[in-house]
Image 1: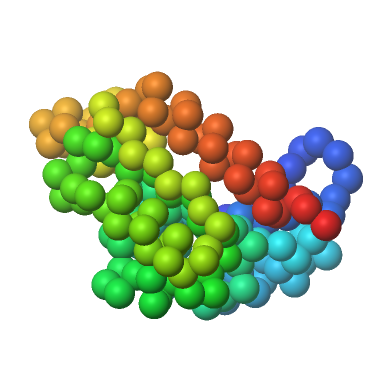
Image 2 (image 1 turned 90 degrees about the horizontal axis):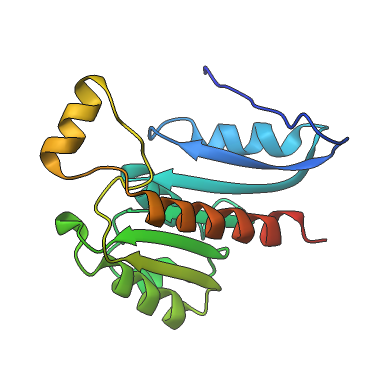
Amino acid sequence: MADYLAEPTDGAGPHPGVIVLHEAYGLDAARGRLAARDDCTGKVGVIGFCMGGGFALLCAPRLDFAAAAANYGVVPRNAAEVLKGACPVVASYGGRDVALKGAAGQLETALAEAGVEHDVKEYPDASHSFLNQHTSGVSGALARISGMNYHGPSAVDAWRRIDAFFDEHLTAA
């Protein structure tokens, strides 16, 4: 399994860990490997974007994560039932995301019904992929044509919320 590990450069550990999901494979092994490291506190969060955001939601009640961040991820069917017992969830959606219209509200309702601590926000001026800065090449062109592009004000606020949420749930005693 190929992986990439980024370690903090400031301060001695142990530190919490975060797994970034971009593909469907290797998640169970990656969480275990990260949590078992001597320089990790054992608290691990999960963050996903698009398909990975949906995976982050599905992992939240299953893999002993301390927090999950789902960014424009599909809300699972029977979400209130599926998300029972989930770790705390922070989620961000774009109000102009036609593929996920109403997803923020669905997730908010499901997490509340499941009794899961959460912070769900829909950004009215943002679309799908609003956290990604694809400005050049094929990715940039596709983003401009599809309308699925970076939205600075929404991205800045979403990252602030994610950072604060992970700080609260991954560093607490």
